[in-house]
Structures are given as structure tokens and as C-alpha cells.
Length: 220
Image (cartoon, rainbow, N blue to C red; front, side):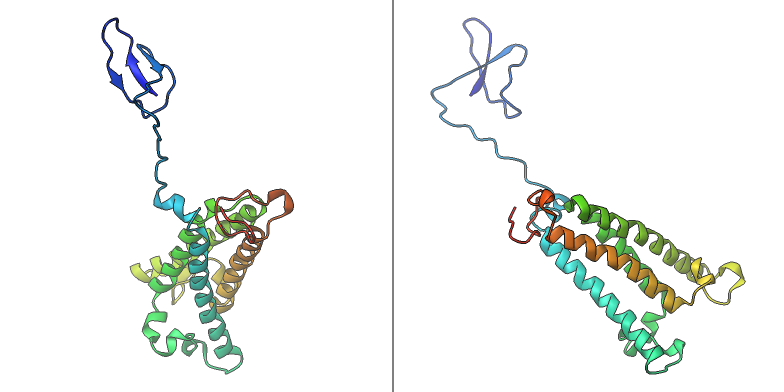
């Protein structure tokens, strides 16, 4: 299929890669000299690939990061409640070798930001009930990130809010920090897990609607 300029006695062949519809001044006609013209679809960008062909692998990598962070919190709780360590010394698994790193607000804020970005970036690959639960996790993590932002702001500016001797977040005014962030991570993690369950095992009415390979027994 080519476009020929509709001028008597003068034909100029033009290939229109934007579609074959008739345009002003041109008429779409057959040309025996060109057997086939195939317009290849545009290659999807990085973001689209993360939510389609790479979605399953991306979620797996993301969950390794999430579970690694969970391990740190659980080890810290074990050190406090089972081993009876004083809270300033209970710094989790990584804190056994790098206590200075665990005591920096930059590490905690960095992880909260990675979590927020990861949930947001991979959200497009979810559909139906899975999308609903994943969005719940996103909203909660956004607030969790705000709490950590308040902490790193105070640590950076050396100006603690509410007259506290150390950086303090909003809900930390009511709850101890270790227990508070265990709670935060729990209420983010639970809807994430539910969302991933519905993503891998969707209801019958939603089966086959996704564009990735995460659904068991289905390949995009």
C-alpha cells in the first residue's frame, strides 16, 4: 500500500508509516511492486517493560529487598524481647557489624523511599482486586515515608520537633519507635501480600486480564 499524489500525469510514490487512511491530496492505492509492508510496533519503554514482560522478575527482586528489611526488624525485636538487650544496643542484624550505619536516619529514609518508589512503579502491572490492595499499601507507605522524612529533616538540621532530645515522628509521640515501625511495616506488607496473591491467583472473572506472566498458568 502506498500513497500517490493525485496530480494528472504525475505520480509520486510515498510510504505513509502513520496509517493507510485517505489524506487530503493523496489516495491510497495498491502497488503490485510492493508485496508487503509491515509496520513494526514501537518498542515499549523501560517503565512499560517493568509492568509487562519484566513484571514477574521485578516483583521477585523487590520482595527480596522487602523481606531483607523485615529480617532486620524481626532480629531487632528478638534482641529486645528475647535476649533482653537495651534498645540503644539492639540494632538488628546489620547493626552487629555496622552500628553507625543503622543509627543514621539516611538509611531508614532511603529504604522508605525505595519502598514507596517500588510500590508506585510496579503498580501499573496490577489489575482488579490486586490493584486495589496494592494501592492500599501505596497509600500507607506514603505516610510511612512522610514519618521518615520528618526524622531525617530533624537529624539533618539538628532541630528536633516538640522539644524532644532526639528526632521524633508524629506517631512516635505516642508509640515507641521500634514497635511503631514494626507496625508500619506490617500494615504496608499485609496488603502487599494480599495484592500479590490476587495478582498470582486472580478470581475467575479477572483471570487472563493482565499483561505480565505473574498469573500462575497464564503467560502473556
